[in-house]
Image (cartoon, rainbow, N blue to C red; front, side, top):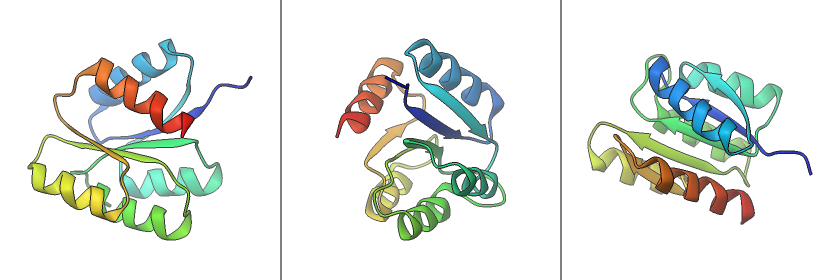
Length: 120
């Protein structure tokens, strides 16, 4: 079986690198983007099975990204995270994020959420 593809979108390189290591170690194929605009372009070129996005980013924030993705791709699976207020996470949920995480996040809880979303 081919491994699932995950698009990680975060403006912090260290967070992208951490997520890449965790996800690749779990057997997933990972693509990275440094902001929402770049992530949206990558997803349109080659849709991933799951998107993990930060909310607070330059050029296009995660809320605008989630809105664009859920309008264009009805079955998209998105996990949102932020180090900002939990209010932003609630907005992300309303816009279509299936799961939300406050940074710093528990890596095992995130991995469990990824596995759940890819199965359902």
